[in-house]
Image 1: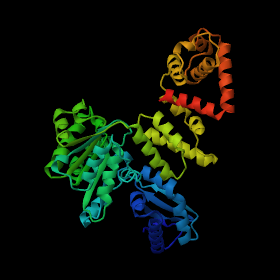
Image 2 (image 1 turned 120 degrees about the vertical axis):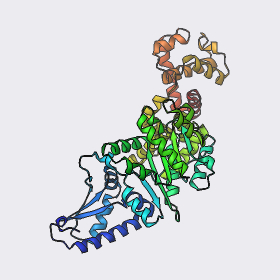
Image 3 (image 1 turned 90 degrees about the horizontal axis):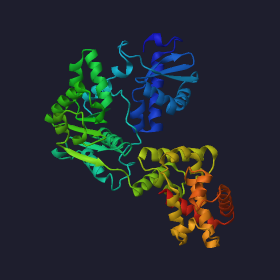
Image 4 (image 1 turned 135 degrees about the vertical axis):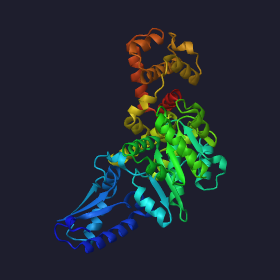
Length: 468
């Protein structure tokens, strides 16, 4: 270690030994997988007074390690060296100061169990944004909409895929699990013991940036050689290359070179190859010649299973009716569904309050509002009339018998709760009644909800059926 990084005269050999012990204990504390994933590239820069400096290759890694492991690193260092009071985690200066750091990073190659030559390649290349440790096959919830895509991904990850699986093309809407499956495949291929596999995983946007960077630095040959030396190439969100003709050209040639060499290619996009307008015909044809698997929109049953699995991992009791409510309301994608549950769990932790249907409405009001479909007063009248076995026309009649008046009041209450109509507008829909009649109905129903649990449950059931 150069003397310049040890301004206080600390023995460099001693500090190196201390760092080795800190790394060993760190690996024991967080496990081998997380250590390889986040901290393997950490480099000791030196000790200045009571501050140790540790360097990482990217801003992303620096920020993540600082947030998740900074306190642990400080404790471990203090146990090795009593003079240490603080650990400063920084980004290593890029070798080429003129290049933007994000564009100057080497290709993101992930591997396990390689020969010396491949280990050197990994040391040189594993510096891009890492895989998400949450996205494994074990945490992927399988249901009817995604079971085919899951089976295909498993087949490729197990290394037993037939030639017809090359390329594997996963497609579907936003937040349905494509990226989860891509990460799971990469984890399985690159972290299983005894495998001699080099996996390059990146987004299509990252591929484009690296290609542009290579052009600017006049190092396209090195770029091509490095990329074509991998065993598995994984490109996420291929639709980003639409309209990028030069990058498409390079990807096409890389695709052909790898397939001709018997290497595996895995691609994801938001549409099937045939529907990717703006992609060259020859590339579209090559993408469609392997296994194409659709990740369909989730069903209610799958959304509920995902929520149950997520809640179990979080270790927070979430009532079944809350999960049923979320599964019914948030239907667009899994990402928003999990985000909603995360907010509820965080709220429960922060305020030490149980998760209830009421807190779900309170905490997620902005999310739920976006999913509220337009419910009409006519629809409310029809549903309430069916529930209480009266004619819809009775909602507007002058009859004041209790078996008619009470359902009418409930319908007015629900119209006020579930629509944006004003009180006079609601009154007009109920036989041109005055707005004060609507106000009285809302007050009466609120009073009965507070006094009669059976009545409250009846109204809640009607409200939930109207919102499905």
